[in-house]
Length: 534
Image (tube, rainbow, N blue to C red; front, side, top):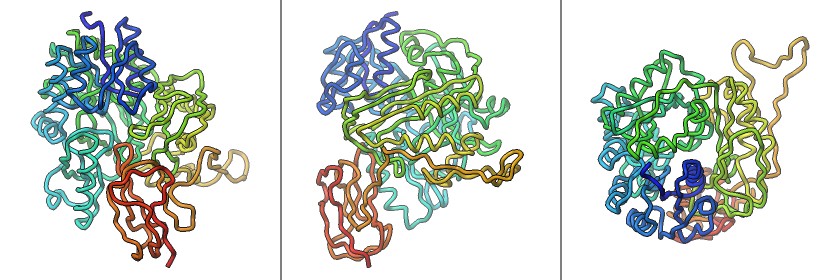
């Protein structure tokens, strides 16, 4: 193998994950370290560390390549992973980009261009274009990037301008590209994606599908492989469509073709031209190390023979975030006790500070079993055994989630968390087993809500004081002191961890006091506004 040293142009969990495979392959791993991320978890997982001004600066990455002498760069996910200019800068610095070529990144990584390629290849896509033609409800989407950033549901023309401006700002902040487009919104579909591997010799294989239907804010919460709603016939159609797109795009490397599925209808959404957060479930059922395959393909190798998947795998993401609102939280992670017997991909360790400027993922928990029920049972037990202290997390939500009847049955759609607000009482199954029952008795079923001392309320004390749930920058202030506001009316927009968060009036009243100004950086707990009830 010509690749002897890999610079990892990322941080957190995925950087540590790439370093682990490099170590297994006997390859040196080189970490990047931004000024606000010194001695972070990923830097301790790598063999060497290079300082950079920003993880989003392609020129800085190229300079790090020259300084380190690395043979190749793995971009992970997010950041510069789908930026053609980053791939070109790395190649100009004399290193191999572990991923698609810059030209393919431009075509396949741009959602609008990818949809055009798919249509030309005969792959079904959703209508997109002028909102007046697409119709309402619609979905505004960032043309570049992924991870749910720069996306807004718009249900009427009155909401369009504000939603488009917010989506564009968020996309610009996350990806350096503020372009957004309108696409038909499909209500309550399943989100199914195909993991692809393609090489420079024309080989393309599918490693099967993942179901990522359970989402919050268009970001995935629980992922599994195989999908519980995909049969052999539908799987073959999805595989054929994904492979046809990859061949039409001239794709090389690991990539994920995402689809919406309703009944027997499928629509291609986009190609994620990188490794995915949820890739471990595919690794668990195929036995293939996707990071190792990416390195081998970049080194001129061929794709392996398409494997026969075995068993079932389910993943959840443990975040430092409020379990009801999903707003990110920061703080010192004093304790982190994780269970044995399942795969854990860590992004932070006990004693580390959850950063304010980056994704607040703590770890991914991945359970594998011979059957879906076995995998889910193992994951449920693992979550019950997990202990976290020092920072608020979504652990209570995850414990609640894996006990929901729709999740257990494998029928949850992308609207699951709209239909089942987090931490509400469990709903009994519908159909033949609807109602409360117990075999052989007349007793009543009881569905307790999981409780945890880690949970606290967010952004309000009940007295009208609206407080900042996290550190961030005040993007906009929508009210003035003395102004009358309605319940749910926008007070301010806070940007934190590359996402926008709306802070709204908890009830109708008068703005008695404002504690912020536009453009200001504020700490968690800072007063946003005090509202006197009307």
